[in-house]
Image (tube, rainbow, N blue to C red):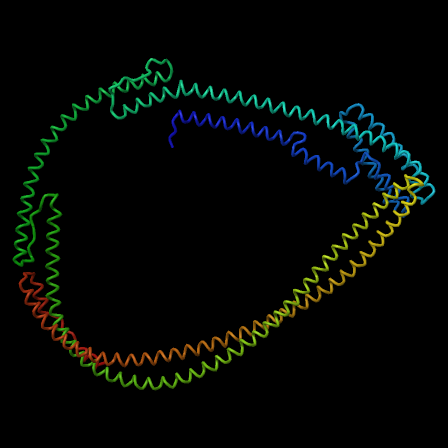
Length: 613
């Protein structure tokens, strides 16, 4: 595909403009997606908020306080309680070290330091007093340490609430700063895009005016030169740049072309005169050669008209007509050979016609014998056909009985398959019941945890929450009983599912055995089908043989009539062969033809050969 420079500049400018627009749109879209408050930022904030709602943060002691109360209620799980407290302590230290190394506002850093004072006091009491009392099972000591931890936790929670308010305000301020920076970058990007578009438009316009337009003029002029128009001068020769150099080179080419045009014209006139003289001499010589060829061909055709097939053109022709002489001689040889073969064949036809007459008599005698044999064969075939027909009827009855038996067994197999399907549905229902019981167990665990949390809050409330603590304790007991009952039901459902699986296996075995029985009945039915089909085919074949015997009898009668017609035709053929030989005597051929016609081959009579056999 050819593209002109002007079109290429337009395409380049369009692509460049499109690229700037796409780049700007992509940048704007990316900024809108990535800015604070944008779609991606909102999705990320939602994920962080959901995570914060699901799990208590390591810097907050609410989960640690809950585990302390749980350990006080269940002293038998002292190791697990202390292990959980140790894990929370390590998580707090890790997150505290992380936030300590960051650049935070002074008021937020002061809040973290105040919270850390209470947290360290909390862990000091836990490690120094609560842990030994829990290990030794000292209930009084445990309750005493919890009483010390309650005011520490209250002061810590107050500091955390204030710190959360400060963090929320700082996050909102940072979001406003990022939003302003985003809009500033978008405005700057738009200004740069407009400036680049202006530069591209001005640059392309200048290239079209100072490069594309002059090149178009030079191209148009060179096109006229290519068509042979040298009448106009070359434009733009006065320009000092590369386009001027191109124009001056084209002018030099134009001058040289004009000189070559004049020299070529003179040379063509001289060559035309010499060509005319040479053509006249060649035409005279060609006329003489054609006359000599015509004379030779005329002599050969006159001898052919007189019946002389041995005529040949012995004198060589000129090279252009030598092929004509060879074709004439070859045609004469072919014609002479054909006439010679016709003479030989005429004698053979005369001898063959006599042999055909004798063979016709022998054929009539054999036809009578064949008719008698066919009559005896037809009687025997009638008896065999009746026997085979009876066998086919018995095989059809056996086939029908086998088919009915196979259908009955197939129905039994279908019933077994339906039973297996029902057992599988029962198994699936048992699995779903097990899943539901698992969900009930998880709900009981969550209820127990919520009741424990409610008990902690009731303890913090003092006398006002004592009644609520009793209710929470009852809820915990009820949740524990629900979990125990769910486990018992799950055990029963598991036993029932195992029994169903065993029943499914037995039903599968029954279905397989019934399938084997169906397969055996199918093979028996196939064998009976093969026997019935073979009997029918034999009956059909014998019927066709009977028909064929009748047709052979008719053909035998027709053969007798054809023998008589063949005898008459052989006499006619002998007479016409003699007439053809008389006509061929007009042609003159080599001595071989006469000798060959005299030595006509004498064939043995077919009747004699048959009798000898």
